[in-house]
Every structure is written in structure tokens, then in C-alpha cells.
Figure 1: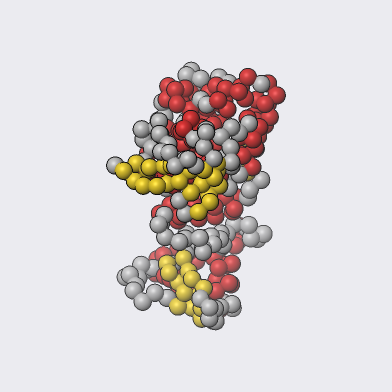
Figure 2: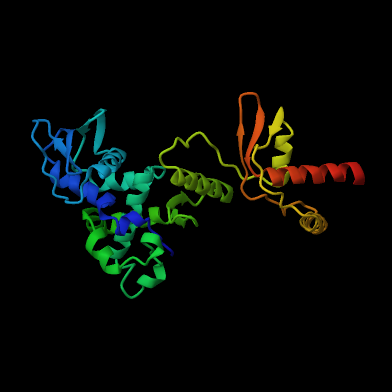
Length: 322
């Protein structure tokens, strides 16, 4: 089993979802409504329903983490947003079963994803499935790929949920069965973790990873209106032929496709066609970005040399060889 964790779990304590939940349970337990009133020395001034300031025990709790604090609590069902600066407290005492349900039924929520990673590793440590002796076998990774300390896991990650689940054989078996349905997948570029159901296809996993990478690179921009597809060269070029027109970027780099590159591609295609008559072995361009506008124009953002060269080759083959 290989588990890899998001950097915020072990190293960036102020953004640790476990600490956010602990702060909420410890400091908001007698509150039915709280309001963000002001900011002082980078720390939020929060008032309860009696207009009294809530004293926050977590010294790392600052205004730049307040949104994440609220997002995690909303995702978990502890609070709901009332208006711009006020939140209603729904519960400060979720049951073990409620927490377990939230951890596994809200697998598309990024905040729950991060918290689940922490809880699962904490539980496996509490059950002594992960121990100091076999710790290296699990390859748990922290910030920037650095190894996460086993002692840090024992000290920081064991919460009341892990303790209570580990005391019940029935609950332990139920959770371990749920864990077995998920895989921990680490993207290559930015150490960002995603968890997917094992029933997800390789194509869906690939597209999800790329979409998450794009959102990570542009966190302040609206990047929800895009879709990632995995298409072969044949599928892509066939699709392009259905559009009204194709537009290439005004700025162009020096052309990099030389005659030897084209010859290598043609020989490769020829060899694969001869070897794989069932057409299972496909070719891919790498990444191509495009925008489809309201006039049904295919506007290439990146990848025009690959697309145009392939179209020229196909045209040449059609005219001269067919």
C-alpha cells in the first residue's frame, strides 16, 4: 500500500483541516451563530450570537485561513453560511458514524479529501497497521516530497475519531472496507493529492488530474468553464473537420518540424499499422488547448504546429498515395 499526503497535512499547521475542526469544537461549542466582525493583527475578530468575542485557542488561526476554516466546516456539516459575514452553527458534536459517512460520501469535495487523507493515515497508525518499523514501506510524503515524520503523525494526527473507531471491531472493519475502495493518487507536477474510486477509468483519472492541475496553477481565476478530454490524433483531427473554421494564434514560434521528424512519424505510423491491424495502438499529440466560440470556430491556443503538420501530412497522403 502506498499513501501520499497533501503538504498541508503535516507541515502547514495553520491550514491543517484537523486543527480547524478541533478549533471549532473547542472554541465554538456554546455558539449558535458567529460573525466576522473585524481584523486585528492579521487575526479575525469573531463574535458569537451574544455579540461577545470568541477567544480562539489556536495561535495560528489568522484571517488568511478563515475562509478555509469555514469551507471545511460547511463541507462537514458543522455550519452553514447565513450571509456575507455570518455563519449558523448546526452542530459541534457530530457522531463517529456521521463523520465516517462524510469522509466517504463527499469524496468530490477537496476539503474533505484532504481531511480524509489525514484521518485514514491516523487510523492506520492507531491500529498499528502503520508502525515505526514498517513506516518506510508506506512511502508517506509531506511538503515538497520530503518524508513526513512518523512521530508527527502520532503526535498531531490521532483524533477522537481514530481513537473511537479503533476501539470498535465492527467500526474498524467497516472503515477498512471503505478504505479499500479508494486509491491514493499523487499527481506528478505539484504534489497535489486526489482520491478516486477504483471504478474510475484510466481516461477519467487522466482528465481529472489535468483539470486539477490547471485549477492549481490558476487559483485566482475562473477556470471552471473548461473540459479535459483524452483523444487520439485520429479522433481530434476528425472532430476539427466538423467545425466551421479553424483559427491559429497570431504569434508563432520558429517552425520545429523538420523533414526527418515527419519521416520518423510516417515510419512509426506505418510500422504500427502493420503490427496492429485491430487499431488498438494509438497516437497522441501531448497537450492541445483550444477554444470553441459561438460561431463554431475552433481557435487553437496551443498545439497548432502539431495539428497543422498532421493535416498537411494527411492531405499529402490523400492526394499522392490514395
